[in-house]
Image 1 (cartoon, rainbow, N blue to C red):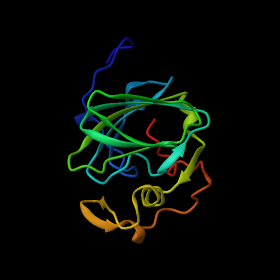
Image 2 (image 1 turned 180 degrees about the horizontal axis):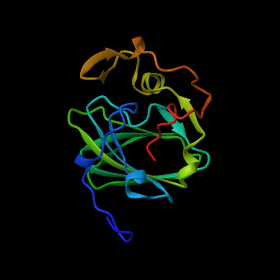
Image 3 (image 1 turned 135 degrees about the horizontal axis):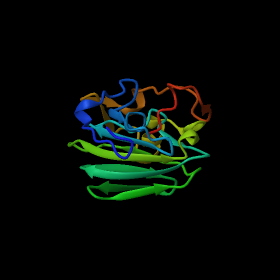
Length: 172
């Protein structure tokens, strides 16, 4: 390492076990203070944020799909983001990225300013949003198992603000 640059492999960085998917939080390891940068791998059925459908009032977010495909939920519907797609969400725009597909998805997430990740506002839980948009009878994968959507419970506070350190896992 020099003061001018740093090189590391994801193999050299531990993932954060408190976050959904496998998440490498790179900003601290690379000495980056101006923005948050993370890499996440979502297995089938996983979502990027435990805050589900959420927004940050003070942070813009950028996502790059490095490999695979994920579904992006936004206010007016949803769309698929595939390998080499890039996404930007202005501060205050609700969104959720999740992987309902059979293959894993690798995403690079950047948020700026870094202190803007808190507070985070959860608009709707994962299960509530998917049930509302896709129906109660559909299933969603959780840790490789199929679970009825209407049987799954998410953390409370569906309309609340979450600003404790463990609750705010928004990618950037």
